[in-house]
Image (cartoon, rainbow, N blue to C red; front, side):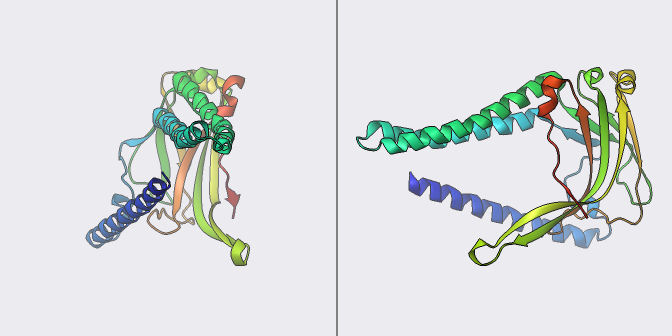
Length: 246
């Protein structure tokens, strides 16, 4: 069992590394063919728009919960079937209680999926250039009129490697910094008027900000985030981004 865990970890690292080598090779090849059009190959963009799949997010959470419980099954079995090995069952039980957080979060995401569904951002044109106007249409989820308000935030994000500590306690982590942001808020009355329709979005893109560089380590990118203020029952379902200002 222990050997399998080490094998799985090693296989994951090898596959992850090979995928990185393949992506880097494809990126270098595409750079030579279109050096001034990085948006063609830095990400697999859909030119018509971008879909947020609440179903995929819910499924990932479900698989994480199932994997956590499957990981604990052998320890339960050792603790129950072997005399004097009860400590395995005790620790497995404690970790199983921690795993209830996975199931609770999965239930929340399932409720969100059933109530609101998926969302889609349709581009008016592609790509977008700094100094121009970003125009798009947000295809809102179900029950749009139930929201008190909807805030759309456009931001430029730069990821940085931050090293802290010293000696054996030295660690490096990725921190997201917000370089620029702009937002628009739709009231409950405006949302009711757009019920069953696409919500038009328009932002002015500043010319003095960095362009998207997803292939750079660490990357710089632009994102647009819809954040709704839903009924109280679902208010805890929507995650808040953790960004630092720069």
